[in-house]
Length: 405
Image (cartoon, rainbow, N blue to C red; front, side, top):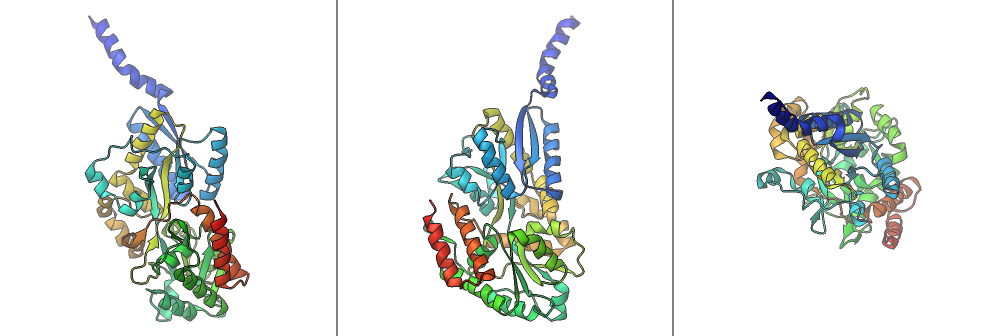
């Protein structure tokens, strides 16, 4: 009588044995997180794989956002793309517009309490044309890093608006140091923050809006600081030099993503690091940064479900809190906030980016926006490093962007 029972038990255990033998559905995952954040993503995948037997998530670092995008475009041509891709938010609309991203509404059945627990800017960004294509993972806001020791020595406070900012930048300038280091990043995100914080936008009625009053005010301010010797303008190719200038006290303020903080900690600062919100006018906003997780077309039904189960695991409050502590990104769930009290208490500056979420807005969700922003970044460099007048530089960028289809 024991033999039939043993046989029955064998059939019951067969699915688990097969899963352990390697028949689980593989979910390839390309991301752009290195350092502590990248290591934690690998840990999350290992934990997820160990706690269930249906799916195996295989994370792979694909380079920074730009490198990963280039790699993905090549993979899409050959059909060798991953199941899950971390799409930087200015690249995300292009994937959707080109039909590469899979609409996820039919696969998601999220509880109302879960949805209400998500911060709206991060969650809302994943929707285009009334359908959900993206899922939040890493959400950031730009902040102002500054040399706290010099501020205190000069009796200065972190600027709250752009008039104060211009005055502070000049007050910080000396023969040895510039008051402000500005990086013309390829997606013009930092310049966009200077525009939205004034109440403007780079896009209006689905068209480029580079010649707006707010955009001109922002670039003219940078131009004035440049002429006064208070500005160091760097391209993204010179980003390492910008970091070194700040660390070596050749520049006193720099705008960057809050997610740059863990990388900055690799440097030996000879001063106390201060972090402040982006200067803002009444009603002004800050553009949200980061990425969305996208399931690419071509994935099997099982792979889609595996990718979504992995995302649900990432969204567990304890894991959100672990993610914030490793990466310094903004928490995307409200229930993770109590778990982060100690982390924020250790250094109150860490809370700056989180508090800005109340003033955050989504970046434009238009497939051409990434190309438009690249044109704008070139115009900023021409104005600040090539001597082109701000109004002319913005008008030329507007015409070029309008010609992009």
